[in-house]
Image 1 (spheres, rainbow, N blue to C red):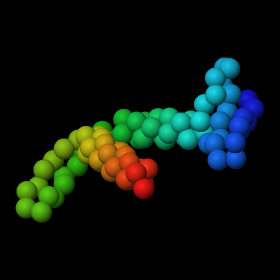
Image 2 (image 1 turned 180 degrees about the vertical axis):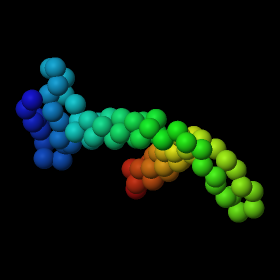
Image 3 (image 1 turned 120 degrees about the horizontal axis):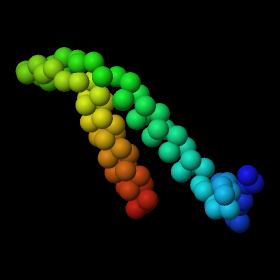
Amino acid sequence: MARHSAHANDPATLSVKGRDVKLRTIGFVLLAGLAIWFIAANTKSVTIRLWIPTVTLPLWSVLTVTLLVGMILGLLVAHRRSRR
């Protein structure tokens, strides 16, 4: 694996099986894998209090919803920054 960089402002890449892959893509895949593993490992039920109602759900579903909301918020922030 060798680092390639055509310009100083280009993102860092690695050559994997003859293809250039951005380091942030590799980092994203690793973090996504860890998140999925963490969600799959936590299967017990938990009680969550939402202002007034109290609900009992499997922890994996709560973690999945939290992950999805975090990803959506991250995409919205990244989109706003790219428009500036």
